[in-house]
Length: 382
Image (cartoon, rainbow, N blue to C red; front, side):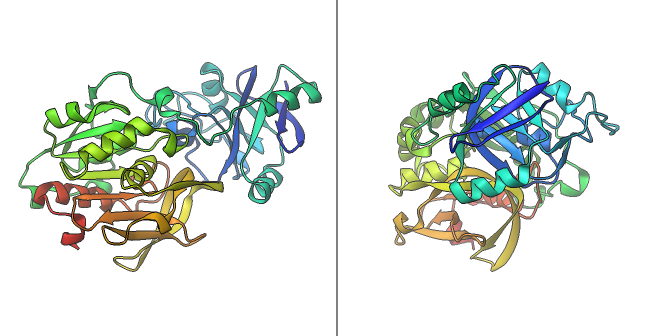
């Protein structure tokens, strides 16, 4: 079946559909990961986005019941150069195309993804429409112009859970990645409240593997109720959309600062920065992929990281008297992490749970546990 992609700069491309029939609009972005497409497409941080995979062959190992970062795909649409339906993997339960069809996600193959990626790098992430239903170019362009902009959009309301729940999945962490936490914790398990702004399931798996009992609450859950649960620590998750638009979450964090140890990832990093009265801005084309180099300014080591974000923290607005920049992106110099000098609070822009991606940054979960164990600020421990 024929499918079309129309971009707001006037570009219209034709390809072949391999997902669901229909039409979808969203912000067209690209991801540079070589594998892990199921984890990417099921990441709630991609809500509202049409994802272009830069790796040319997608689908060769199918999909399975265990590797999703949420129960279903979260992307608005999928663009690939070549889709491979005849998958081969002993863990696979169905093809990628079948999985996307079952969850009503429009996908297209046969487009020049290299050209699309270079266009996004030149002009920035832009609105687009994928359609198998309407082949009229003028109508498609009118629909693109009417699609919402990502700036000012609060998507946490779309992806967050509606009620608190306890995370009780059996730990499936590979043996070589299982941390030996008992040496420092003496077997103590830590009670963690995780704000779900679009949380990835592997974050909860990693917290669990480090000795945490995780209770997940909605993104806008009142701070007073979180404190009434008396957790050992608070985690603020990744998520989609513009962080400055999530005003209630920012106010909640302002209430929680200094009360309990706090660790933030991705959107959680941005929300914490805003809670400290810093500012965020939209990147030209974002960071999405499993190969982004980050320098840890505390250890002088380079970490290859997994990333997925379209906004960033403006480091010039971080108060140097109270906040210390801890990580920086080596591709463009943007901020990748900070810690408070006195409060037990730290956060990073990237994804240490690495699903998909490298595990260079897994130590951050150990840092969070140690901060809960000692009650000391991150700055006092290093």
